[in-house]
Length: 427
Image 1 (cartoon, rainbow, N blue to C red):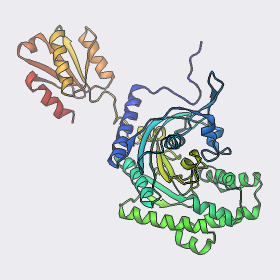
Image 2 (cartoon, rainbow, N blue to C red; image 1 turned 180 degrees about the vertical axis):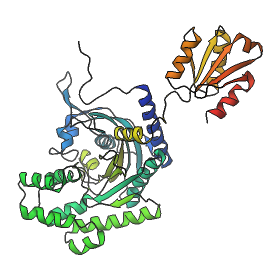
Image 3 (cartoon, rainbow, N blue to C red; image 1 turned 90 degrees about the vertical axis):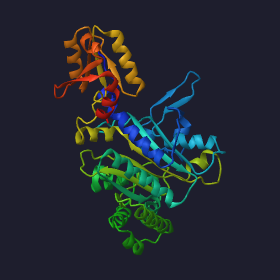
Image 4 (tube, rainbow, N blue to C red; image 1 turned 60 degrees about the vertical axis):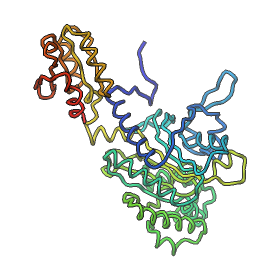
């Protein structure tokens, strides 16, 4: 039997998992810094929930890429393709929640789509949303979280921002009524270029004149100039909201957000502001974070005519990790901060010392080999910096030997000073 993982998924070894944990912990700290609370939703959803026309939309790539299955009761299910639809379902099932509701969730999502660097079929998203506020201040806060998250991770990004209202109005002005179909193609502009998008639009039955009018407007990447060219009310409303949003960004010193009229976002549920964050160095060309305003989904899940405002974003862990492995190599060694204790015929006392260090929140791994040479080889291979050698001679003097595996230097240290010394070194 030839062992293989399923296509598009992979194991994450310890050193990579340590990096992933670091990214998640950093982003979690940022979410909580901005007042977001944690939430967990199921990986499995009823297919009709995912397929609702006000969720992914039947024509969207996300629904086409949904993994489907049936349970023993022959109910059709799907693996969630994002964390937004489950949040909308949760909100609709819990209408008494205090608004605005600010939540974050870190979880696995699945898409049966094409595979490339930074894009796989099982991946982790870090989502954060504000439900119950239609103020552009909420949108600005979402962008602030994105900028702060990447700042904490040490990555230089640009956040491209647009409005679906503006794009919808431009499509209307171009005489394009099947907006969802058109937007799925327009969303690929960065990936397949203008020629590719024009080809797709023509294949979908849109006329050359419609396409020319559309591109003549989205090639004007300036809000002030667009005001004089746009006639549709929805587009003008989108421009006004973007102007307000960028004003708040200025007040909050959000410097990475820029207007990009070509940004569409392919999912059907977006209703207003949309954004995507890209790495400036372009090591990876896909977005590292994305999101926007989705004001219609929750109310429709509730079978209500009332609109429930919502805006949020999502960090893509896989592309972020790929970038960090290139831009920040060898800075996230999984064993760097672990102390490795090697007993030399002193197991009882060595275990006591190990437990005392752990009680002081110092990570300790204990050697399971009887041979010192093998223990040192093991520590060196894992990149462990500090090894504590505990022999009978050292214990008779109430001390231990600490070896720095990077420099080879060995220091004799009194046991009663060991904890304080290690805490200083591991800071």
